[in-house]
Length: 491
Image (cartoon, rainbow, N blue to C red; front, side, top):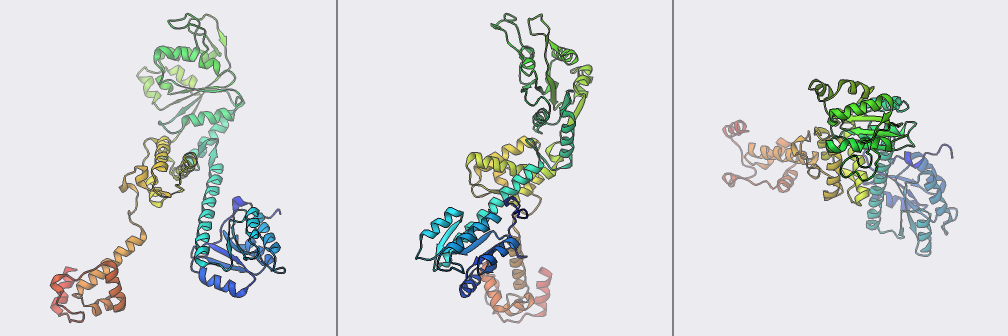
């Protein structure tokens, strides 16, 4: 059992052609051959005639789908051997989708198989059209589950608490968080709006010795100046109009834990002095109070402002800045961590797909390209909001650039698929050959290196029509040298 891979590491076997693997477990050689002939164009087919051979293939190939006959030797008349194979396959590869084939004599076997973990069942003789639909659904479900497992593995490996990232800038952030977490020094987190500064603060708190204490966040720019002091330091009863009772401030409420001051650059100068005093001696006075209160609270702060510039403009105290920023953590903008953008988009897709019970399951290649090319001025917050909208608005199972409200010209690649581009090129080449040869089918087909029949089929396929001025020219009409030269010049 030690060498068995877990379901999280399952990888479906695929041939060089990219076809999904299908294992057919059937003791009737003729029936196996018929199945292989019918399904070989859609699957890489493996065969097994008994339970032992089936397990060998599963261990070697880990196919995403298995078609399993329950009546296997040495006891083909009963389902015991098939059910044993079913259990052993699922023990080795829990994500494998097993479709069991049962005879009409014992319909209850199918229900037992489903209870054991079979994905679905078909009755013999098997109707191939029905089987193909079941197999198609099974492969799709297996791929979806595999994508989800891979995403969970990646986010688990790439995540740092709630922060997701695999890029070099984020690894530096993670290392700084580890180093400062266990100390009590103030930390200044700097970065543009929407980059996740509060997530960094929360990660520091969770990894610190204060993790069991409170984490309290306050936005210094969202509270009017005349209320901010009371919000931070509390007030005594009667301190001002409306102060009907004593109230603790956020600094006191965070005792034994962490206080996160977001947008610290918006703090008024008077409050900077009072907070500086607290950082120096760990004591505060409530508004209207005279008692000095000792509080054990760690301060983490964040800003999207240029504090050096604010210091020069006398909007921010230099001594307060140096006391506050014993350690500085710069959080990169999303455009500076390109490797993380699609990964984050997938995380948000999964999050809101589950929360909103949406049917969308993936990002289209166009959406991935557009996401990579966009500058994301609103950073991670903008990406999250656009992904939430896209999950709601997507019409199909995939998200496209229009669902994200991204410009169609930023995808960094043609807006048509390879198949569409190939068809357009083929049509243009055929049309040019026909014009060059004055719609002489024989000569045009010869120039293109195809048969006349193929050319006729392509003309019908692309809806090409002979111009009116050529309507009297037969397929085999010769073309003069002068006409040929003229056509060459026009081409």
